[in-house]
Length: 235
Image 1 (cartoon, helix red, strand yellow):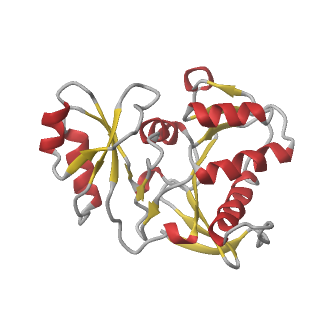
Image 2 (cartoon, rainbow, N blue to C red):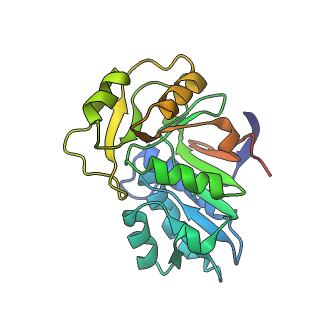
């Protein structure tokens, strides 16, 4: 991915806010600034998106139509006065913004710590511009496990054995669409090859490896501001 240097202002930490939270908030504010009136906006899930929603609401934009990737995001967005519709109602999205668990130098992502990776990937595919917002520690030299999985309950033992090493998450509820949440725990030497292997296995509804071709921008909150990386889907 190509770097365009710093973008957005350094956001001073709030009282009691740890550095990672301040970086997430800075990246979220920079991403919210990309949204224009009347846009159709995809909203991801997770701790970084929790900073994004107030940043969008604070802009007071008119005519936004949002699509949420989880019930938690939908509830939080509605509570802030944002209009939320289904993806089928909205259709193509102008922009989607989401966090990530890891981002490597080639633009591969691991997502799905919150178990919403299948919906998040559908929304990413539906967006003309897909923007990823992370704090500095999420930018890694090499991806490492776990890779989140959403699996069918039917034949679960067989599916997990075929994907070994993999394990069902303990005490984790099913996804909003009824899939079981698990993790692939093996080494990630070739993200593309692993993504193809996971996608090809019957019983796998979806996995948390997101290919660079989906990504338009990665906004990384750092101590001195927000660094932008331009991805393959840049507009």
